[in-house]
Length: 381
Image (cartoon, rainbow, N blue to C red):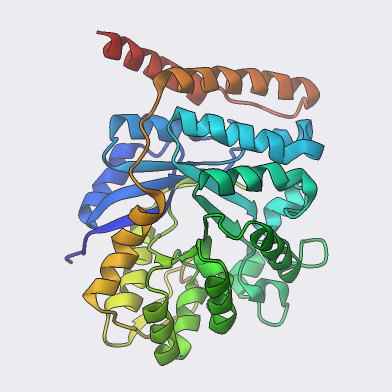
């Protein structure tokens, strides 16, 4: 199968996934560059050192979007925005290109002491992001059916994603985010997974019309592609009108989420995600997406109806929109990364003093420190 050239704006990364494994898949699928997006790590606190090593090895293939420092929720909860802004600024100095926020996922909101995003304690971060035009990739909510016992898919329910009153309500969180946008209308945010509004295109259109710097990405959930297949005429019109505001991304890779541990890399599932997205954007005929037992399609077939777009629009969605939005990748600074690795090791020791059940793992941070020490010596030579 021949693939068009693309930049994947949404690939999860954490060791033990090696960059060479990812690059092999990228080469197979025409993926020129990938944005490695990071989420909190249960034992290692962060995967930033992992991703920056990959970027240092292959600077022409990778961007990196840092996760937050989740320790700040517990150390400086009443001033979390101030300290998160400082952290993100430091990560950009290390060589990160933007910020990935996973904390809008309801299970993360329930698991951690995360203040509501529109509270004053967050304001320094949003001010910093707007002033510096920091690109943010933000996961906000989940499919709306996850809050409805009558409509939640069986696979989501089995995964603990039927949300009751103990989870934040999706409309409450949408309202929080919109209050941020009202106060900071020029902030740069890519909302992951089509902002979970693929069944509400007029509502999403209004947001895009109101806030000129927000974008959405196409990372599956299958529900996006089922919803967009219902009325292909309306879906195609939406993509044509907002062709400059939609970004290609797959959500493939391997992630280490603080709440639920390691999710391993699967090339088979990765290719299925790419097939799903390409089928929507480029195919002129309907196709049956067969149940595969994995999370993407799982236990039920569904019909994918394509909305084939022009080459000009496809080039924007697959490549140009991300390049325009994020720019060229930043260079990795070995000295700053070494300093961050030392900080991570120290934080893991401190956190263990307060929580005896915390089995911290500083192996990756120490390995990255050694790697970048060699980089510094090579640069000096």
